[in-house]
Length: 99
Image 1 (cartoon, rainbow, N blue to C red):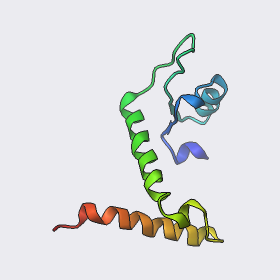
Image 2 (cartoon, rainbow, N blue to C red):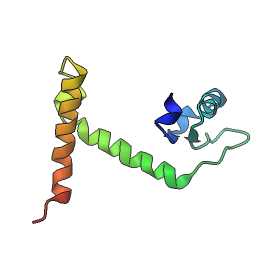
Image 3 (spheres, helix red, strand yellow):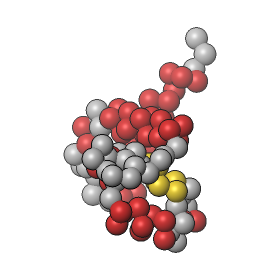
């Protein structure tokens, strides 16, 4: 079940619909979705958690700089995820390497 694996769904305003919010609530997951500007009764969201969405988006942007990841050259999911792991490590190393 999805609720066992995630605590909150971070999404942008494009996912602000009653149907999506109901499905997320049924799964027992917190919806962290800002309300659209034209919504009559805006639903509040956790701004602190929503800031984490930016970090996730930037990570995917950096990973897509690797052509092999962006175009999905690998045939199997194991080799694709393996290369995603290698690219992630290469991005992470400068932050942990002491000069």
